[in-house]
Image 1 (cartoon, one colour):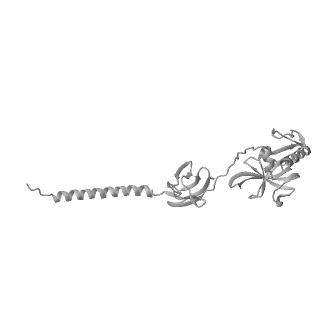
Image 2 (cartoon, rainbow, N blue to C red):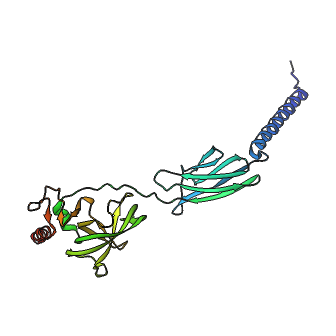
Image 3 (cartoon, rainbow, N blue to C red):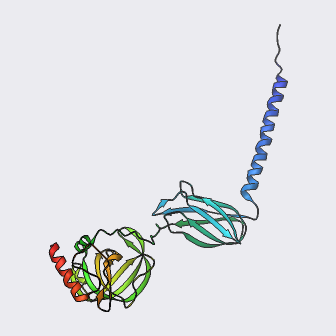
Length: 268
């Protein structure tokens, strides 16, 4: 028995399939267009970098009237925040380990607002100090001085030992020196002293016997640690350590410096 193909039926089915696909495509395109355009709204897009390198995983947030919309940068450091109404926005850019940036942006009309950001490595506000002992501190001190804090300049960001740190600069007048091995331009009766941390503990008028180290990259002295800034009250030194024989609490400045000289000579 011979079977004859039905070309008209096959053609009809093919045409219907193409028609339905075309209709579905038109509907999908229409939906995408509606969401992409969002008439009357704008979008913010851009890139976040650090030291000319893309930063992925950065959260970028647009804030206005108590409402927030956020996006996260991709592997190329790019982000897009769509669906924004005209208005004034605060754009916050943040990533752990980096300084947060906040920028004011006014959106006045629909469209794309392009914004690029450069994040700086975050500064440490608190620094862990490890006490390696009295002998170690005496050997590594560039300067052992009797000083009076004359001025506190203020808290700033400093680059110390290839790290960004919060530190406070003090101006101190030196009245006696045990040793000073820093560069000649630092051998002054007045020195600049850097104290790590956001909360200054040295105030104008305070006196100390100080063990300092020289930081050539910033041109400042810095205490080896706060535990090696020994306060002086009414000519007597406050001493709380227990690892240095021959030193006692309440020694006069003269007796303390004499004991220091003897200890330094013994280490040579």
